[in-house]
Amino acid sequence: MSTTQTPSSNKGPLSGVRILDMATVIAGPFAATLCADLGAEVTKLELPANNDPLRTFAPMKDHHSLYWKVTNRGKKGITLDVRKPEGKEIFLRMLPSFDVLVENFRTGTLDQWGLDIKTLHQANPQLIVLRLTGFGQTGPYARRPGFARIFEAMSGFTNLTGMADGPPQHMNYPLGDVVSGLFGAFSIAAALVESSRSKDMVGREIDLSATEAMMRLLDPLAVEFDQLNYVRGRTGSRATYTAPSNIYKTSDGVWISVVGSSEPIFKRFCSAIGMDELANNPKFSNNQSRLKNLDEIDQIISNWCSSLNFEMLAKALNQHDVPFTKVYDINDVLNDPHFKERNAIIRLPDEDLGSIPAPCIVPRFSGIPEYIPHSGSKTGAHNISFYSELGLSDEEISKLKASNVI
Image 1 (cartoon, helix red, strand yellow):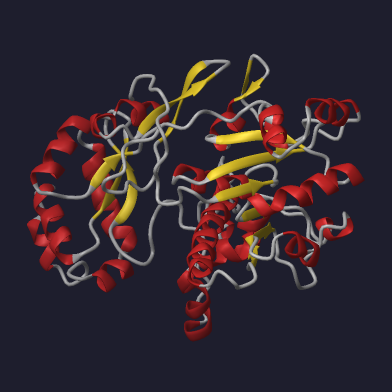
Image 2 (cartoon, one colour; image 1 turned 180 degrees about the vertical axis):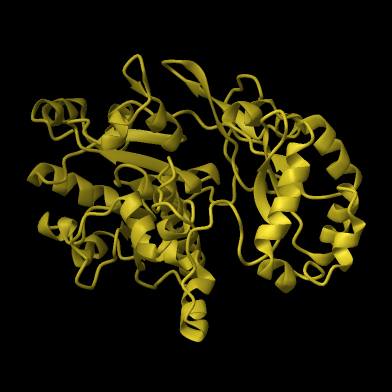
């Protein structure tokens, strides 16, 4: 893990793009953060009451939300209550200076506040508006609240997770949020490319359903059911579309993930375990045959893995160029020599904790130097500088603060 670094100027490919992020929790903010990583200037707008739920997510350290600090990295922080007339007026005054607005309120919420798409585009005709919700802007579920575990469960993803004889399981991480955030960042980039080709076009309104984003990851499920009446279900860590591909345990208690699915790899794997004859056995000679005999091939591999400690097993698999890895926890990630050399984990400057580790900017662009963003800011940290640049006087800013508009 790299040592503490000083932020440099972000010259990423989205440099010059200005994004106003008024979304809450994870999905929408993550989309904006990915854009900030790539050079966009992102301003994070919160309500003055400091009530974004992400600021309360565990774990906390000394009353500081660690989750907030990494998820909202690289952004300026302001507050504004757009529900109040003064706040709405300032909000519309701000919009012409932004290229993109990100929001993830329940469908129709901004309309209720008098900030419908027509009003937004009257303030800035070229404004791109990303609306990231659980189920989209239309349909019978449009007004339902959305949370990552709901997206995961309704998309079919959760039905794939767990043991065959056990209940469906959620992972201990809001995958549905970050997946939809990825789609959000991609959508923003696509809309920016389109708008760059025609300066006169009206800004796009992007309707992004987080549940549909999760469904998009599960390409074969619908066609399997339609053509074969096959409902893919839970199989633990075992893959049922290619084999062998599973997690096994060594004699010294290390869990490893092994993939030997292509024919050349499977042959090398058979050599690694000292059983070359398996590659010519009709039950295992190709992927379809191995899938029909999953229990048997898995038992053979499990027995071999459990007979060796991790060091011995790793030596054998490496010698035969078989894809495998120890199942890492975060301590393994932080100490892996490859990740260290590439600075895959960087340290974000933080005014409360000195510096904090977080994943590096992904991907890396040739000719653009490494950039280290600062951690997520405190509520309203940039109010004075932002509203001064907007043209408000010190007296006006003080009055707005006193009336809890900012």
